[in-house]
Amino acid sequence: MKRTLVICKPDAVERGLSGEIISRLERKGLKLVAAELRSLTRETAEAHYAEHKGKAFYEDLLAFITRSPVFALVVEGPEDTWQIVRSMMGATNPANAVPGSIRGDLATDTGENLVHGSDSAEAAEREISIFFPDLA
Image (tube, rainbow, N blue to C red; front, side, top):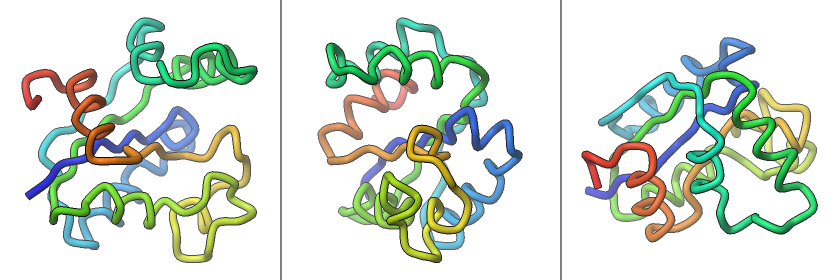
């Protein structure tokens, strides 16, 4: 079994969509192994988004992810769990996300697109160690 990180971003929590997102993951057959509603510090956000440092949108990204609580999750499933989650999320731009995906059904803005999922097995390990160090 492999694990990946999922974050219900501030807009998902503010809109009361965390339960819907978790429900979709569970209905897919993924197992929830850790979850925490938390406000991210700037330091945690910087560690999480380190690969974006120096990009034009970096400060806006940090401001968004730290503006209100997120619901951080670790889900477990088959070898390609991170890919399953990414497919369920849909395209980053909700206008391009297919109906049936989380973003295709629920998001309207590229900058506030409800959910984050690790984009590789290696990223999943790194991100889980940031948010849930006891599981790493």
